[in-house]
Length: 202
Image 1 (tube, rainbow, N blue to C red):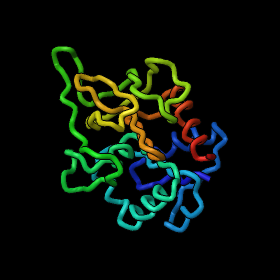
Image 2: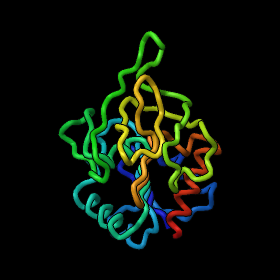
Image 3: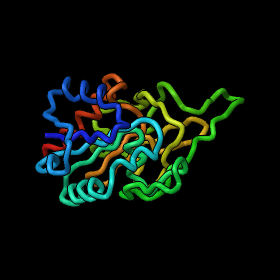
């Protein structure tokens, strides 16, 4: 069973549809106790980083304890950004701190017509396939919609360029994050979600 965390800023409808299509058994937990026994956790998200404040200390502790016990965690879009230490978008709001570094605003490039927010399809430049990107073809295209992004650090599994080069996929042990929306990224996105579900079964 996968716990799909709802903090009222996630794109739950499309993530639910993708998980249902893949035959995944999942719940949207209403209480911390509902997460007990989950084989994986997904934190989706759209919008402003400050929305993660809804994940209070109880949720943070429950998620961290699950990760420490070996449960896989996947952050999507703002959910991935929350895995880091914090964001320029809401400087006083702490991230979960499972990844080092802070989220920064994309600069864009007016001359090259690279606007912010970055919306649309773009390529993944795979740095290390790891588990979450297993089976993806080189240069796989996925769907983005964001204005802030993670730095390229040693947790970067793939990066993407949009004026800035940023981490579009991160992986460290049983913690995974994707800046794009795999549930809206066709077969490449479904492959990533399958890989996460497979990690949850190990």
